Amino acid sequence: MRHMSILARVLGSSLLLAYAGPSLGQTISSVSGQLAQGNAVAITGLNFGTRDINNNLIYDGMESGSFNPRWTSPRALTVDSESRHARSQYAAHIDFKNYAENGFFTGGANDPGPWFCQYWFKLGDNWTWGTTGSDQLGANLSNIKMFRMWESGSSVENFYIASFGWEDVMFISNSGVDAQEKFYAANGYQTKWAPGSWHLFQFEFKDSSLGVADGAFRWWIDGELEFEDTHMMTREDEAPYKRPYILGFFNSWGDNSTDSNDFWLDDAYIDDSWARVELGNASSYESCTHREIQPLVDWSATQVRVTLNQGSFNAGEAAYLFVVGPTGQRSPGFPVTIGGTVENNAPGQPGKPQF
Image (cartoon, rainbow, N blue to C red; front, side, top):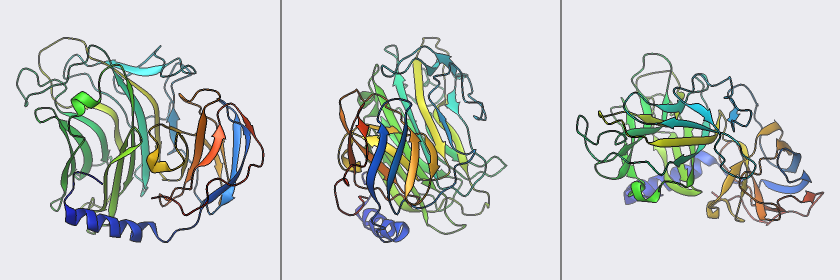
């Protein structure tokens, strides 16, 4: 955890253990199938937990040349012939010329969750971050909402991450909640997220009980845990649960400039469960700097089946499979080789799940 007070860190750590519960000892014992793009892979083990796979799970790599029809709205995004890696032909695209241009997905019904969301994004070489306040020259791309949870009714309570371009920091807020917590994170993002490179945002969000500070939020940037709080009050007076409202970039302010600012979005994923499977480039989840989400086929407490998403991993490259359980617990990494066929391998690294 970063960008938080010492007291918040202590409280967050203790409440995380209480929220996640005791270690279930979930482990992967074997993997079968060829670890190559589009192939069926079965992951067998213990204590994966249970979950449903329903219409709230949406994965979209845009590789059909069009958007998944279950997005509520792709806003002003269009499908573009942009490749994130060798197995990709398409990505969503928008040119942020002015205030009216907003590129994001909305998906999922009002649902208790918890929610897991992710997307990859790339800024064009012509990208210029806004660095001023509202109604000033340079306001365009200064206040961007990059993730937002909001219910579909009239509630004013919502949760979001936004850029403060004039301070070069990200701002996290429980808007509309009197007891809201506000934090700053991702200092110096305008330099870190340089144009021309793909970056991965991943989010875990759990709404609180009404009037109780038992909500949770985690944000990873390129595999690194940027922010964590497990004692948030996200529902103070309003009963409805939230669903992902912004997955991508929402340009809150603008100016009269008409210069192009290209933005691409790929492998967008939302799900009303934290239970998921990912490929990573390190044996422990928290050490990964490259992760690829795996589209789910079915899930049980002892076996999960996925359609392999190789992503930007190359054939012959060493990688690790992780099963993340419904409470966010993560199995030790199970070693695999991309492109290789795996049958009844010995267990991966022993030990308790990493948090």
